[in-house]
Length: 91
Image (cartoon, rainbow, N blue to C red; front, side, top):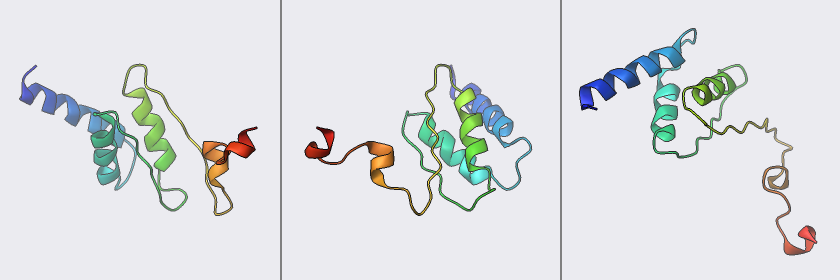
């Protein structure tokens, strides 16, 4: 696959992810940048800024992609995400 063909495919994917979203080009580009090498992405921002929608759309762009979504609040604790943080708590 030549680089122009890959560039065109990425442009089509980016445009597809962007469809119906306003001013989300930068988060979409960053999400693709993280997804292509298989890295993680943490989206932080105000409610209603399409973070979850972008993550859901991105998951469908890749075959056999895994997906994790968790709503965090100021009361969320690390244990909610990672489990007990001490050996004693594991027992």
